[in-house]
Image 1 (tube, helix red, strand yellow):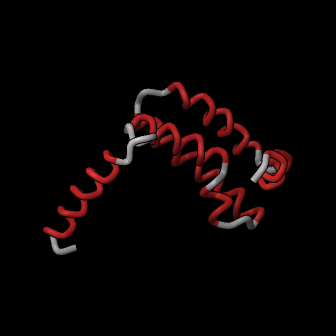
Image 2 (image 1 turned 120 degrees about the vertical axis):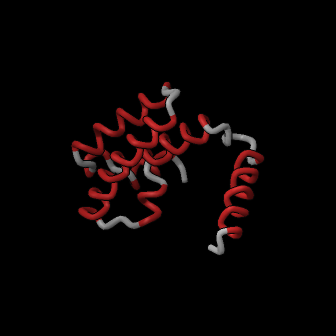
Length: 105
């Protein structure tokens, strides 16, 4: 998808004022160092994105790939050091999976 297609998919003029405020927060969060704060703000931001989706009827992919979601998810990946190295993900997944299996799901 090129820049024009992306801009057509996420039209600023269709965004609610609340989502526009969270766009600012998504940019500002790039300097954050507190994972829990980022996650709490991400949840609030996604609530606003979901409200826009309900109004615009865009769908799951639109929400999952929304610029706000991308920026927050990128910051979370950075803070958890999963950005370029998938080893932490697999290590964490395997540990959690062992716990689930040990508890009988």
